[in-house]
Structure formats: C-alpha cells, structure tokens
Image 1: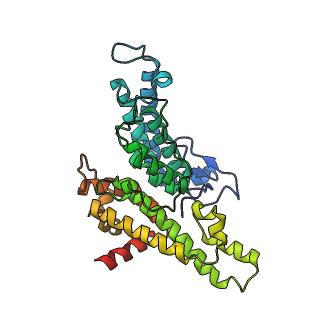
Image 2: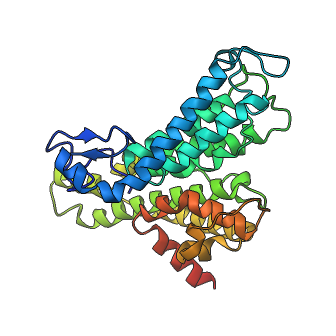
Image 3: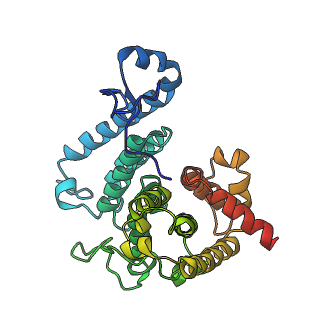
Length: 342
C-alpha cells in the first residue's frame, strides 16, 4: 500500500536485494545499479535532480548565513543551538525556513521512498525549529507518513494537533512543554470531534479518512480469508493473512489478526469512514469530486485561501494525492460513497 523501503534502480527496476545499488550523488534520493543505467535515465531524471541540487545549495547558503550571524538587537546569536522552537518569530530565520520548504517541494517531485523520507525528515525538523508552525508544514506530514507506511505515526501526529495543539492555554514559547508526544493512540477509536467538525484541518481529516480506509481494506481481506480457515493448515492460513494485510496497524494487532469473525470491526470502520467522508464533504465541497477527477488541480499554484475554498482543496489535494493513489482500492471506495450519497 505504501512506498516500498526496498530501493530499486530507477532505470531497470532491479532491487537492492538482487544487486548493489548506487545513489545519485546530486539528488541523493534515486538509486541505480550501474553507471550505464544512470546515463540512460539522465534525460528523465535531470530536471528533478537539478531542482533538488539547486534547492539544497540555496538552503546551505541560508544555513551558513544564520550560523555565522554574530547577533544584534533583532537577531540573537547561536540560533540553532539556543533558539530552536522560536524560528520564524525571528525575522532573520525566514529565508532559511522558506529555502528548506522549497527543498521539500523539490524532493516530493521524486516518487521514491528515499525522497519522501527525506522530505518528511525536513518537515519534522522544521516543526522542531518552529513549534507554532507559522508556515503550515504540519499539513503535509500525515500524507507522507501514510506513504512511508507509518500509519500509527500518522494518527498520533494528527491526534496531537487535534487535542493539545487546539488548547487555548498551550504555551508555544515554553520549550519544556510536551510537543508531538502522543504515542500509540488507539487508531480504531471513533473520529475525534476535531477531525469531523466544520472547521477541522482539511489536510488532517482527509489523512485520517484514508488511514481508516486502509485499515478497513485490511480487515475485509482478513474476513475473506476466514472463508478458507477450516480448509487449509493454520500455518498456510497465517501466511495468507499476512500477505493480505498491508498496513502495520492491523498486522501488529494479534487479537485482530487471529479473530475468526471480523464483521463487527468492519461495521465499525465503515461507519467511521462514512462519518469522516461526510465531514470532509461538509468542510470543503470541492475535495471529493477533485480526488476522483484531479485534472488541472494537481498543477494549480494557489496563493492565499479561505476555509472551504477551491484553493484550499487544491493545496490539500496536492499534499495527499500520491498517498491516495498508492493505496489500491481507496479511491474506488470514495467513488462508491459519492455514488451512494449523490
């Protein structure tokens, strides 16, 4: 369902399990099994490769400038060492933060696990540097978690922002306050109020919808496997079930994996998916139609946007579309919901 962490040659598809792969030294997120195949792929790779290389160079310049800043009445010294958490509030850091986001955008043009993982790492460190997230980079993180197969992390991240991140008295300036500290929350619990309210984060609500759909697909697969449960040896059945389940949430839940009847859980998840679907539809009427027919929305460059607007949808669609297409059956499930409720 998610991108495979096993590296493949971008030219021939050979995987790291079969041969030694070499990393492109310019972009550092694409692999090749040899020089010949790197040359053969150059025409298709050079645009994104050069964009990543130039973005990294621009970021390096901005970081050097910040680290060498002696400090003055507006900019304190030792920014990275002593002022992490407060970036963006310090004007001099904004060029660096913008350059880092530009690198994330360049990395995400490459559809490899290494590229998505690198982009995710940058975003998480940007949140460490600027807890209040003035740039809104938290909107990109959940979909990248899903693409990397980090379903639990996706839910934990969204839940923190929907709970602690919504507390009016949370002191964003106090670095001793817990931050993004939700771990191993119950992914199967009913959708939180802040996931289905009219003014919920569209990015997070759509990510939670996709996460629940992925889990529902896994549980339905387990239910289908139970039909052959009495006809094959247990070890074969376990092997079949392991192959049917793609996500970690169900694969790591022994009680669900071993259950004979998944019908109650399936019913529970179907209700949750439907509730989330309706909440997203109410929050932004443009999103589900655009997911089914993205067209020009994937290349639009919206600027400012308002809640529920076409521009908001375009941004969130671009953040999450790859995660949807990398989950077989997910868009079909949305298509069926649209058909039933039209």
